[in-house]
Length: 147
Image (cartoon, rainbow, N blue to C red; front, side, top):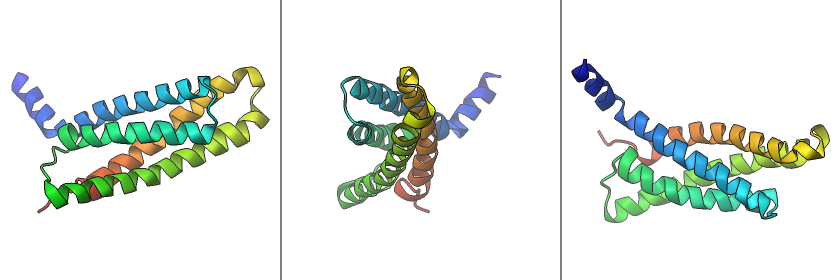
């Protein structure tokens, strides 16, 4: 039984690590977004700032513990640039979802007393889209295993 569990953990280590660290990055993103909202930052500034901080967190965790990259020198620089470029793409997705959901639709569809809750719900929804896109980019482009 223990051997079978160990085999499964070994087989799915990367996915488990991605879910764990992706979950931490998602939690960090949502907490930062709510703190920045409480501080009065507009949605655009809020989303860009929380993404910058989370992108840096995600790069370190993805490189070290998820994809276990050993790239050095110029290859590490290319990996970092590729990571940032892909994450800028998902930052645009996050900004678009937050603008559409929180800034455009929220005030029209949701009563004022529920705007913070609506903002939170849109942020969670946006994070689901972003985490899937980030995994695909990371797996297929950034940390692609060389044959």
